[in-house]
Length: 142
Image (cartoon, rainbow, N blue to C red; front, side, top):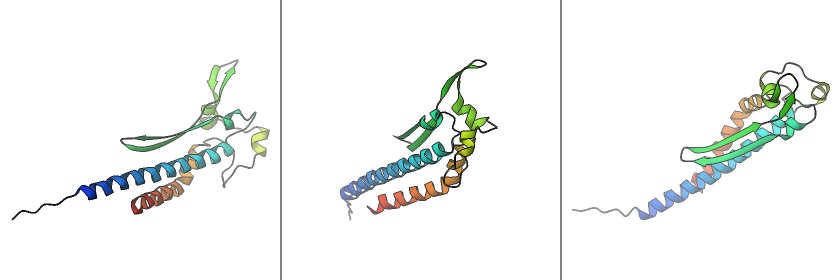
C-alpha cells in the first residue's frame, strides 16, 4: 500500500500566510515607531527646538525579523567640550530644565525631561505588544 500526499497547495497557502504576517507586522512596527517619535519628540527638552526636530526612524526587515529604531542626534559646538551630541547629554545626564522646557506641557501623561526616549518606550511597550499581537492574528487570518 502506498500513500501519497500532494502538499503543493498547502505550501502555497503557508507562503501566502508568511507574506501576510510579515506585511501586517511591518505595518504594526511602523505604527509603533511613529507613536514613539510622536511622544518622545513632545517630551524632549526644548531650547531652540533642534533636538525635537532631529529624530530619525527606521523599520528594517531581516532574516531575524522586523526591527524598529528611533534615534535623536543634535550636534553642537561647545567652547569647553568642542563638538558634542547634546541629544545624548539631555537624554542621559541633564539635570535641570530651562524655561521653555518647563513651560512645555508634555504629552500622553509624560512630562518633559531626560530619558525622553526610554520612558515612553518602556511605558508604551504593552500597547505596542498588543499591536503586534493584533497584526499577527490579522496576518494569519488573512
